[in-house]
Image 1 (cartoon, rainbow, N blue to C red):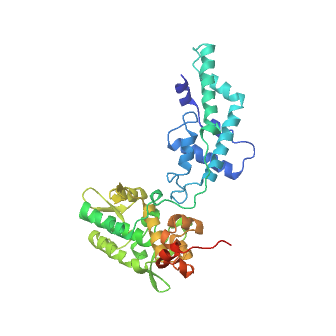
Image 2 (image 1 turned 135 degrees about the horizontal axis):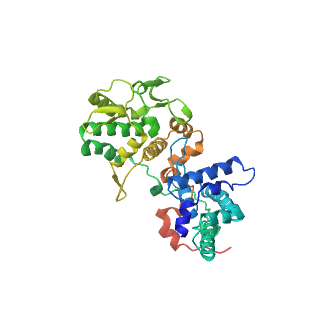
Image 3 (image 1 turned 45 degrees about the vertical axis):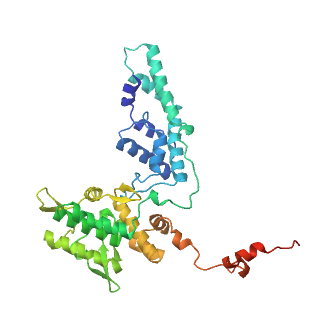
Length: 362
């Protein structure tokens, strides 16, 4: 009975208890929670706030404006949950909830049965909002393990770009190889990749060959110099020649007969990448467009490009976002490259003599 009644409980009843004069951030958090429930076919009774906390801090949380993964820090996730718990608590204190629930119970049930069902529903709501059941542990993390996000090495990039040519039909393979090559050469988002036109491929920035990205974040146009990655255009040119594409969109969908159709969707880009898993640290891993974007950022950083230039190429408004894409700045760059001026008697060649020597106490 409680399960049947929970299906009738409208999630909007929680939204009505956001509080008086809520701040824009509280409204945003509440709307995001409602979208989460709808997107995961959940309601306020069967949702798990502990799982929602995990969702907020994972790459499954997508920024609705940029379409990119946007995990929250533990501190921000805790603030989100605080807003949602407050909504639950205000709902539980409102007697209209009990009246609403009684109105939904089958009239043929006895008064005792009705009360038992309503009490169970309210207890579930109370448990859902209990901070003990969905706390967020806030801990400082200076370094990020390589396994948390995929950033390919050059040998792994070589393996990845070869796979479409080995594993797919000729035209699909050429397209996917060209698409991944351009993403790795410019850091373009999947939404930007599908919007690239032939005329964008060979633009100039201060005389240097560059890709023009018109439909970037916030509809800002940016130019990304290819530099040494300009050889990615060889793969793109092979695709254009084989598909006989002369203008308009570079990357197109193909029907089951191999005929070139309309421009690709971002979903099609994501699906295409899943066809080419590669071995990383002994495990087969599938890649996302953002893995290629992170790889681009890390490769630029490892080639000693300054952070501001990497930020501009990626189209980030904040340098902190760029640092997140680069990931750990690398043990190599954090190792001192010169020796400390240790006294010569402590040099390794003198260790035997040092061990035999006795020192007088002061």
